[in-house]
Image (tube, rainbow, N blue to C red; front, side, top):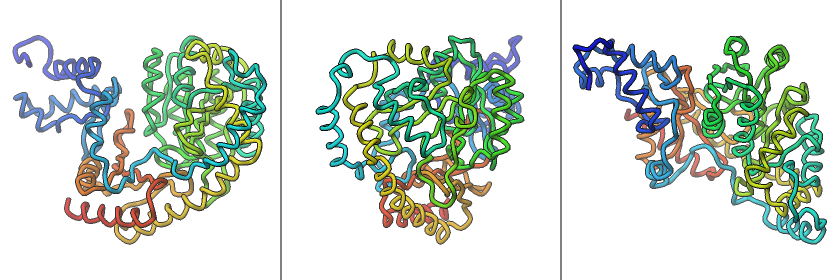
Length: 452
């Protein structure tokens, strides 16, 4: 309840109320706030009072606003799992949302051979208690693969095997905080499901740095006061931009001058279609870059295997954190993946899937050009998704909600913004959808948009 006769200005009272609701979890991250005009009418104040409160909370990183769109919660705990299940049920008939590889194409026969080989050939000691780094066979196999394919300078002795990227980045945030880091920079927009809550749980301040066609804005990064930055330089998520050679050099110079750490999330770089593969940033400055990869987009997320290539000074702390977390990842699966990579099955699977994903992407692009030519696709040369930017008069949240009611699932860019507003956009995932369903989904989306 606002006190109109109190000493605290009205906009400060509104700020305090919203801030406390976010911190307490009553307003979970990603939830939308009422339009300023509607909230002002409900509270009996002028719209300018609410706008001032929203602007202050946006500057603090609690809210994110979009011109002509909506204001959402950008900080605090994520919605509870039950609420997420309720929001996502029922599953849309045509699901073009992002986040999944086509697990129906998982190479079961080849994986079974690797499991059998692991059981037959693994030395006895790998079934005992291991070091936090992971089994040496997998670290060696992955280092050789990454050095050959991704241009890294990976030393098996400076790798830690984790149960996927989520665990690895959580451990790393704790390590960096323990070594004195105070602030983490994230690309804005970026995937904020793992790193952002992990950083805040570790006590790190988080700041969003805008991206453009050349990747992260290095001038803004220099002004941020960050001690570490997480990048997706080969295929920025979700915009699809590639960190330019000039910006790569600038980021490395920034890290060297500040003594900062660059975390390179190389989440889907193996899938490139229309341009020469982009090498890793880690290969340019292995003493400054933590390289992170996983099996989630290349094989299947259910394998729960990821790998972190670390500078020497972070390897032992990261391995110790892994041991403290779970005593190490399962040895049999590590040995199986080592065999799978060494025998060339990993390369064969990627060669088999690239044309499949490319055909689906091409169908999506053709359908967008035919039915929705006003939408501008971006980030189309690689990965398992693309983004389209919306005209100013279309609200992304309204489009996503109307599409879901029509049986088509897709994602908006807005929920992945941290503190910097930008144009509305839609994220299309095409990896798990048939070509026919993609064309049908875009046609349905076009009808939905025409009705808005």
